[in-house]
Length: 408
Image (spheres, rainbow, N blue to C red):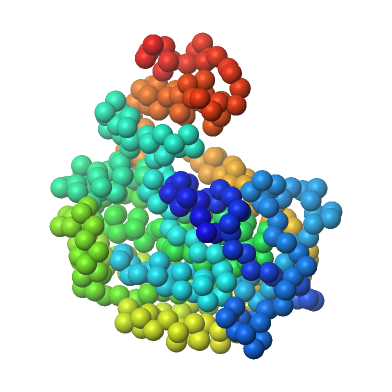
């Protein structure tokens, strides 16, 4: 998407299909997925053109009644796949992901920027409210990286939980895009690997035991989500990661008390013992050393040789979701991924409050409600605030808005 959401429009979502370079998808045959990736630069045997334009899922989300005349699998082709690039901090995932996306005509989705957590749909950065929030303030990466002691930054647990949810919604966006356009998606990181950072924070004392227990409950909430076809893991030693972090010269990372050998090693260990083994059950996992990803042509060639076939007697679960032969199931998934609200309500809204987790639970609910929830940028939905010049309707502020009473 030429403009992926203003990327930092910061919600990790696509705001418009205008200007998006979508490859024509091949007309679907008797199977719903084809076995091998196909380079769009292949002029000898190019992908066939499609009769079906991409569905405008932004302005016209797919609803239940659309299934009676608008089916899903007709747009899918060899490259209708989801590929995730994973790796430790500083391992050049963006460059690798963009190269793969360019080779196979896919959309590249970067990892969710931290601004997605703090900047609401009205464009207001809620970190500006920190002086009035006390210990319930919003903690960002700068706070995490520059904290002298772990106990000074325990409130970052709320931010880590919100980052996990945003990464989940980013994967939901990838599914939504693929099912509505037929175009494959390459992602930088996923919500499955978010636990690598939570485990590292816990190991280094930045998560209490109660906070990590609550995080694990939230982490296990998403169920029956279609898994990616291919995961490319960039393997780098702790020393290599530290050198790369130093090389990119990010001020908040420089001399950070957090980025220790133990922290980086725990991220790597969690990847290799918990995250990648799960990916291997459901799809293909390719592991490359940091030096090997310099030669992207070789990696692309190896990816084209992958046989992304349906389950067999040995790997009974591999690609199982993606070889569904019933059209209504594809349409149902397309409905479920049409907006983030469906999965938000299904997985997260019913979670109990983290009363036993001091770094996650809001301590002063009355003050937080007054300062954050009653702030005009949060109180009014986009286009409805009387304080803005672009409001949709001229409405008077509600009489019981305590924030406006207080600040009048």
